[in-house]
Length: 535
Image 1 (cartoon, one colour):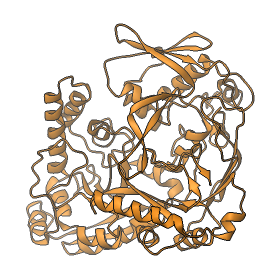
Image 2 (cartoon, rainbow, N blue to C red; image 1 turned 120 degrees about the vertical axis):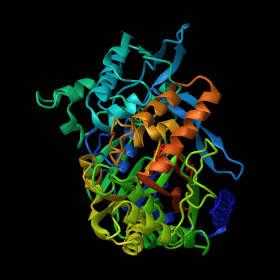
Image 3 (cartoon, one colour; image 1 turned 90 degrees about the horizontal axis):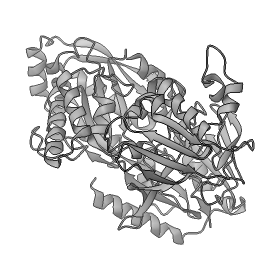
Image 4 (cartoon, rainbow, N blue to C red; image 1 turned 90 degrees about the vertical axis):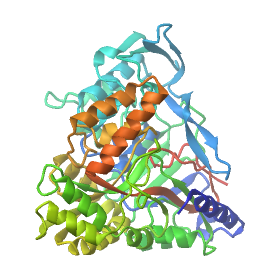
């Protein structure tokens, strides 16, 4: 599916606005939103080990950051965030030092945490110190913008805070506006910390300590999370929604039925088939579809485990995959193809971009023989049940196709709540996964997914010192000519070595009642409830 078809889908969705709204949706108070999703947050703190994607949404609305992103309207009328426009949130202003070596933020003097405690620069420093110290995902994320040491973060006075730059890095300011550098009520967390857990991670997993637009009223993991508006929020316009009930409804058919009946207002993880049908069949809902930038579905191979440590075996797998069947029967055309280019030679800096791989079982078998694996082997193919509506049919089709070249796979379904923890172990030989980079830059994606630092999202445990150097050079290149050359080189290595096989660039599909207004696409793929309203 190309971008024009996505736009047409959005236009069809807009036409649904003329249809009558469900009586159940009409009866619900206009300041209450009911959400139905396949899975909810497994943690209230994005800094905790294994926090899942739904946890990003908690951070986004229950905590403030110094800055956020602006918005822009696309030609088809869809509203999306603007990566090139930073706007005030907790910080009302900021100024770069004349020598470009630091940035100083002025905090809002009337900002308070949910318990009424004033927000100060000491809280900002403590929060940033925490993010760069706890390790794992938050620390890697901060490092992506060269935010690496507590010494970089300086309290000038109660409402003035400075970030010192380690180096010139175009990602630093953008990185301050993602969910990880959230501002915690430091004294509250300290009261609930222990000697063994000085940053209070065990407590914040089930409790919030923020000052964002919403508070958590109830958190029942595996069932629901309930948010209520924080009426003393000062970092933006007060949201119109007073209460948000986000329920977990694992069965996709049930979620669709609840939406159509009006029992829920919005859902954003239905199977592609359902989104495709809802955008065409004239149901009293509207569907928004946006290609997810810097993202892909992929098949990852653990390069530390034989025989996937052999590039020829990995190339054979890439040639054995049933790409078109996956596109038609698992994605239902709601994705952009990342395969079937005229060749595997990289000529563009675009990312993601299609590889030259396509289904060719004869070539795949020949490569298996060259690799000494002509007799085949057995392995395990794992996927996240939290995205099972797409990943499970993909797994079945891949299992069948790999069997044709002698690779027998046993499918391993891992619950969504423990998927991130399973990735951290780095012991799964073959996985179906999806990754989207928050910052829309190729080198950011590669920093997370291919660099030898072996971050959680380098799910293949891929190590290549030459590629590491190229990624670093691309991050800090000041010449566009050099930058373009570095990007092409790193993409070429990824295609040749193929530790992960790109499959599709996914879409962010959201179905909602026609009276839900203000939805916009965000890089973290969670609705910003602060912006939603009901007409």
